[in-house]
Amino acid sequence: MLCQFGRSLQNTLVHGALATVAATAAAISEAPSVQAAALRLGPLVFSEAGGDFVLTNGQVEADRFVLEQEVYGPNINLFIAIDGLRSACPNRGGCYFTVLSLVTNRTGSPWIFFDHELQEIYGVQSPEADGLSFAQGINQVRPFNSDRYARVDEVTDVRDFVNFSSGVVAPGERVAFRYVIADTTPINRFYLLQRPNFQAGGVGFVEPPPPVVIPDPVIPIPELPNPIVPPVEPVVEVVPPPVIDPGNSGLGNEPPPAQSSGEPNNSAAVPEPATILGVLVFGAIAGGARLKHSR
Image 1 (cartoon, rainbow, N blue to C red):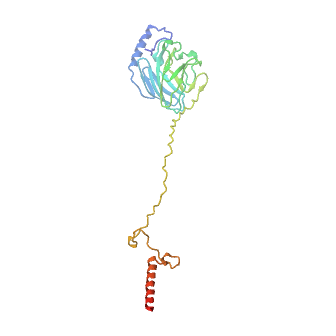
Image 2 (cartoon, helix red, strand yellow; image 1 turned 90 degrees about the vertical axis):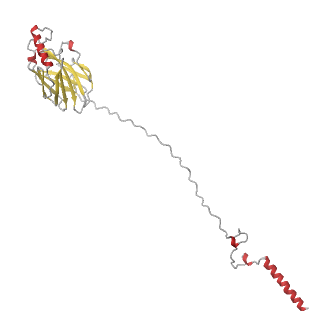
């Protein structure tokens, strides 16, 4: 069991402390889930002490304390007060316990760093000699890890901190951290400071780069070929032939005689050959009659 109250950081436990370990472990395993701003989990109490976040739930599992949080900002200096460690570790040598922290990003910015720092005095960095640390020197509880960050930094700054990087937590996503807190000289209350987008090495808070917006692919619209327009044929007006009345001609296909215009050149003024012959015959008969009469 990783939550080992009463266990010496230097593995020098006295036999009397083993009873405390067993009793505390039993109390932790029977602790139900709690949903409140202050979470009492076994012998410890976790409560909101500063910053724009909320402790939404928590529980004790066989080997760790589970904390569920939501961060909404803009103040992302997030302080959790932890009470009860002195009562859980009454014997000399101190103790340590494992934390599984589940943090949901309700801010409008992605998180590219996430820093954890321990403080005995609110707002004051923990020095090396106060006995409070992230299990400094206890190699068997490492490595610390996260499901969203690949890198864990504990050596850049001279302070009690664990900084996670090489990852990103987008708005609306949840990140999990697993780490161990130890104290060789436990006090009644200490603080856990959490800071999204805080980079170790004296850099401090950083502004994450804007998200890369990948435009939607532009699907070209294929050009349609020009439609084939058939040529427009000219409209030919068909004039029907004249209608000839068969009663006006013996042949039935001759045009009617033209009207006489009274002009000399008009064909109607020229006598037909039959008329001329009749006149000649009539004249000859008349002349013969005159001749016979004169005789």
